[in-house]
View 1: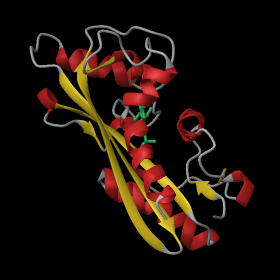
View 2: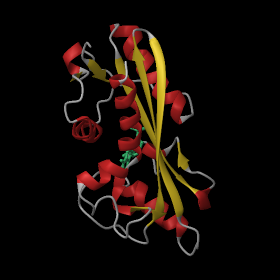
View 3: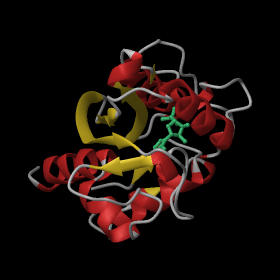
View 4: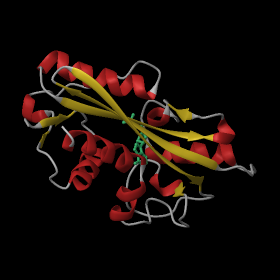
Length: 192
Ligand code: IMP
């Protein structure tokens, strides 16, 4: 199997993907194929954005690749931030401002249930395959923990009392939205 390009520039995602893959198949970064531009994500849905990013890399560089898009869905906010997760508090995509906005919007509300959803779009030999991973949980009352990235300090996964930012990367990867979607991708590629 040829190396598969990871179609993301997010260093946190790349780190987790490498940890989860643990060498299961060979991957390459976007820079190694000369792709340094921002990938488009304008479809308005999480699966749509994952497919759009993967198709962009395939159409412009002609390589097997996979892209992922992730959103945080909060029940009391009718599924927001959803597809707007990255820029919820503004175009600066500031993680702290995003978390503070969520905490402020949930103040005084009893229902704090939420989930992370990741969709991976794989283009292999020109054919599209998608894989979804969901991590159920709840939004904490305050930020806790130093590890991870994005909204990790305010997300407590189901079955745990600590946030993703307090749990080890091994635990996060084993139960996370990204970990679950990646396991499906891995199983698909290994069964070929
Ligand atoms: P995107 O998939 O790159 O559009 O990212 C969506 C948003 O979700 C960004 O604000 C990320 O920081 C955040 N995000 C993605 N994955 C995770 C995660 O595993 N934990 C916490 N936040 C995440």
